[in-house]
Length: 480
Image (tube, rainbow, N blue to C red; front, side):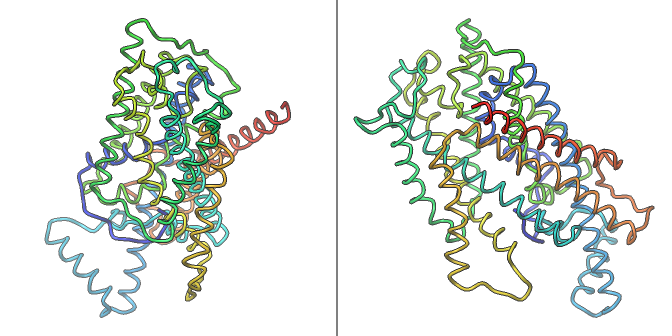
């Protein structure tokens, strides 16, 4: 996720890239959004998610521009190497590519995005040592939050299914952690049992390398869309029959800080853009396609959340929206489908957990890596995996409030990855290239928000949000 330069990957069309980006963005965060909407009020929620979608689109264009700048800088360095040593392997490869391009009727553009330069490598190219370390700390904290959310979401779903709340009478009941599950075993105890099983089954993958295969990705994406479409249709049917129980407030400012974090988390894709954009064969209209993707995602989030808050009583909405369909036969009276929705997060999240864990472990290694140095076997194979897996499991052990976990992860680490890092990358990328390429060089992938005003606007907005969220948490804790 935050590594260096890698191969661009098998090329695909712009439309396929749009679908991949849609699938990447719409994930676990979407399942926590309905409750956040109900808490903040529907008017405030619609206004905030629209604005945050716009901000996320803006920083996405910043990252794409920075990727083009990184490719241009790499080409320039190779050209310098060619001049110093015209008979080197690199120089001969550059000449061959140029000749092939010219014979094909094309031309060499320094800003073509042909090499996948990950965020960490861009940070190394454009930031100083302190900036690089801050980037890795930020992405590590974000990945810890990701793992804590995943580690809590799976046991919650298993607990809800296993504790037998599918008798069709549970839809109007809000259960507590101290309520019995099996005899003297409480729901909280059952949750921790499932968390332990989850850790034992998936934790060991952190000590090895894990990769999500193409077919597994297709399967999980298919399950996700069946579940999302099913929930939207079922909620619309119930609302159309006049059986909707939701009466959400118009505005409730107390719910805004958490909604902010949930929305930031739900629009996150900036860290994976190099993997998504680089393989696109024709990048001529990539900014337009990204904008179309964001409009579709915004519409989807609004549809999912609005059908939820008007279908279900706000006080009964679960942190994980799928669980509202598992214990209410008035909405869904087919047992198999109720269990499918209840267990859907278990299948999809469980396949992602090892991938995120390995990515986090590798980022830890990169943060402490020194040129020419190697890690002892114990540090490499035991210490790094343990510091990767233990903290998020401990967080999930003591709390399973998914809405808060998503909100805090999005509000803090998410703000850094989605706002601060892209703004700094595009700003310093422009400064690095100007002395080399000259003022007249035009980056064909430059952001529509090319004026430095937008960079500073994003930074001021991000810092203001961090202050606001922190102040709200302090004031809330003080009142308790």
